[in-house]
Image (tube, rainbow, N blue to C red; front, side, top):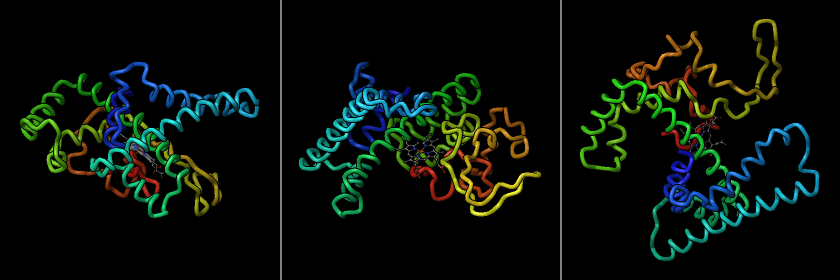
Length: 260
Ligand code: HEM
C-alpha cells in the first residue's frame, strides 16, 4: 500500500513515475525509506548521535542520494514542459513560484521532501484501514459498491463532480479517518493565553500537541465512539464543523493543504 500511494503521489503531484510497485528494489522508495528511518531513529531522539563524524557522514550520504532524486524529478519536469507536456501539477506550481522568486531552490527541495513524507504514508494508512473496514463490514461494502457502480458507470477515473456525488463513500472515508486517523497528533501549537484544566494552569507560550486519536474516540464527543458507523456523517460534515471533534486533516492555518 505504501508503494501504491508513493507511485500515485509521484504521478499526480510531480508527474514522475517512481515505479516502486513494478520494481521492488526501486532506488526512489529505498532512498526515501533510508532517510526516513534515520529521522525517526529513536536513538537520535535521545542522544545527539549525528555529532559522531562517521554517523554524520553516513547520514549525509543518504540525504545526498535523496537530493539527487529531487534533481532528477525536477529535470524530468523541465524536459516534459519543454516538450509541451504540462499537467498543471503541484511541482509545476512550485517551479512557477521559483521563477517568480517566491520560492528559493532550497525551499523547493524542502517542500518536495515534505510533500513526499506527508503525502504517501498518510494516504497508505488511510487506504489500508478503509479496505480493512470494508472487508469486515460486508453490508457497508455492498452499499458502497452499488453507489460507485451507479455513479461512475464505465468511467474508471472519477471526475471532481462524480467524486462529490459519492456521498456514501465519502461518509465511509470520514468515519475511517475518525476511527484510525493516520496522523494521530497535530503539528505543535503555541498557547496564546493561559488555560486552566481542572487545577492545572498551562501558561501562554507553551507548545502543545493535540492528541487527535483521543478526541476522535472520546465518548464526550461521539456516541458509541468505538463503533464503525458511516451514517454518523450523513447530516454533519464534521470536516467543516467548528467544534473540532473531527480533526483528521487538522484545522486552522496549518491544516492539510489538500483537504478539499
Ligand atoms: C488521508 C490522507 C492524509 C491525512 C489524514 C493527512 C493529515 C494531515 C494532518 C493531520 C496534518 C496536520 C494539520 C494540522 O496540524 O492542523 C497534515 C499536514 C500536511 N499535509 Fe496531510 N494528510 C493526508 C494526505 C496528504 C497528502 C496527499 C499531501 C501532499 C501531497 C499532504 C501534505 C501535507 C502537508 C504539506 C502538511 C503540512 C502543512 C503545514 O506544515 O502547515 N497530506 N496532514
